[in-house]
Length: 319
Image (cartoon, rainbow, N blue to C red; front, side):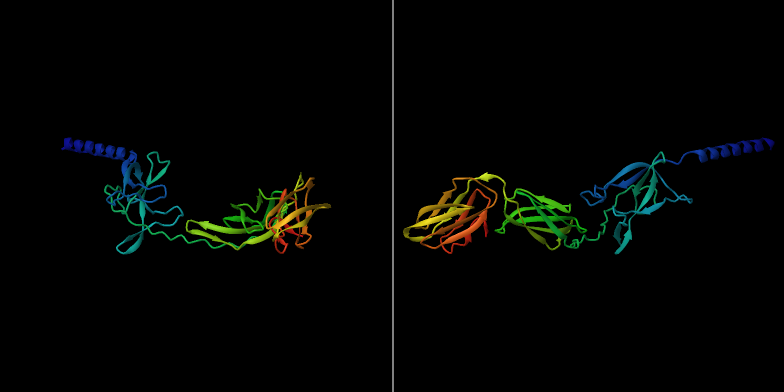
């Protein structure tokens, strides 16, 4: 009898030692399957519509009852990802796992509280709120322009927006410059000297759904005159009057020139014998026909028309 008691005591000791060894062992590392996502965070599916998964070496985090801990999956904006199940929207959950070292945290997708997911399921469609076109911003204000000879520096009071659009048109309403900027100032270059331009600025907001703009604010600015000395070539449109001969009188600044011309509707070209600098006043008149013109220019070439009323300006400004 004593012999059996000794055997039982030895067996009990062995069981106790094994239990202590099992308690001191590290948590079991197992292969956990997680869904593969693309760069946008969307679940990747195969040709058959099933979710593509991959195995990661991780330890499932469990609670005090030994059950896996789960959490709600969120998108890039921190909003819960939902799926439709039995006609109802439900949050997508995933099992929380820890790396083998315990220093990093990874996540394995799951639809239940199972420790591992060994089979794939058909991808569930996630519901995202549609992106709306942005609200139009307020219009900028206090537009100012500082003229140079061939450029104009613009500045304005800014508003909350994605950016600004700048446009410049000449005296013939032709757009000579158009661009966008995020700044509240801009320089428009490659402009003609001593020329009037209208500059316009508006604000805009933009996103993936489209762009909304404010109203334009505009300001007219005349560039500075050229400081270069040059001869002036005048292209003068003559009237038609049976090819009669007439006397054309031309004044450039304080200088006066007379030329004989035939009234045949042609364009008479006159080049000044001397050079002029900056803006000069120009007049042209016909002695017999009575047609005349007056204007100003700083350009090397200037076109005028005295074929009819004598007041049409092809290139230049009215006096």
